[in-house]
Amino acid sequence: MDPIEQFQEEVERNIVGLGRDTDVQALSRIWVREIARHKWAYNFAWLGRPAIQFPNDTWAMQEIIWDVRPDLIIETGIAHGGSLIFSASMLALLEFCDAAESGRVVDPAKPQRRVLGIDIDIRAHNRKAIEAHPLSARIDMLEGSSIDPETIAQVAKAAESAETVLICLDSNHTHDHVLEELQAYAPMTTVGSYCVVFDTIVEDMPDDLSGDRPWGVGNNPKTAARAFLADHPEFEVDRRIDHKLQISVAPEGFLRRIA
Image (cartoon, rainbow, N blue to C red; front, side):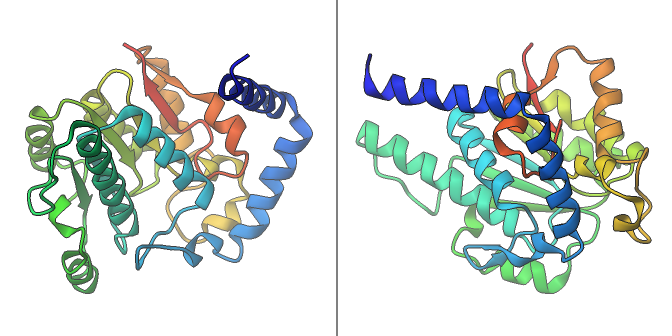
């Protein structure tokens, strides 16, 4: 057997085994529960900007971006901008690799692949830092509620010219808000790509971890994703990603469009 194929088969066996190991899955949830009390996700940055994400999820996003090869990534929720910078850097790498294969020269001032971030409140200091970043030419930001019809219309217009669209939802985590986001943005996801719903882990955590936030057990991104999937068979949960990661804020949140 080809050694590359042999290694990949071993990886697949590992992932299947993790999917069957309920003890490891339970331990993973316990670890996430306890580390969340320390705001562990706040500790990481991407190319100089804070990115409030688990490293495992960021690695999964890198694999998705490489496989899907989007020319537009739409993100709800900007915060400090680390996720936008991450997406922009991945798109820049895609263009570099494409250019290397074709012999073309990439003009960094005229990027073909872009990321669009949406937030109801883009803080002035965060906007300034994002716009000053070397990758800012790839980033567009839209201030407004992600579920406002005007915002949705502007995003839909941006998506019209994109061949492949990847969606990331990470703003207000209440059931109703996320469900409205899914209904608005999931249809923009191209077949074979993903609509990723972050912080579905809220459903699996004690309510006290949500503090005074308006979301919690029974009212969160996972309940919204499940409600959305019940009426949208064109999407499915990519459980292979859940099994592979174990440590994740987005279990059942990697929604792949299959039709």
